[in-house]
Length: 110
Image (cartoon, rainbow, N blue to C red; front, side, top):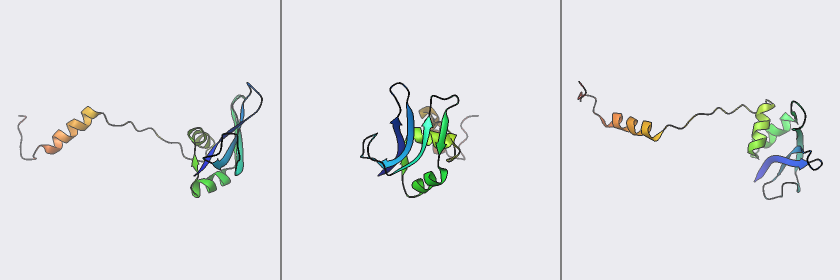
């Protein structure tokens, strides 16, 4: 499987990252297929430079972005931001099944 992920570069204590396309089995700083951008978290605000066309191409052919890269792609405007939808609680789900089991003609709560 091909992944889009971060590759750490820079001096000790001063990280900078390349956004790369690599085989999922290769090590973090190992062999890459293509370099599609870079990310510098030390600048204020953080600098993100990603080739959107190449990122969309690789996602289109099946590359899976890692969670940090997915966040960077959303911040750069390349991917839509994911909205958080909370899971229904178990009590709510149990109450919903009780109302479904009640017959429509049965009005016992008068």
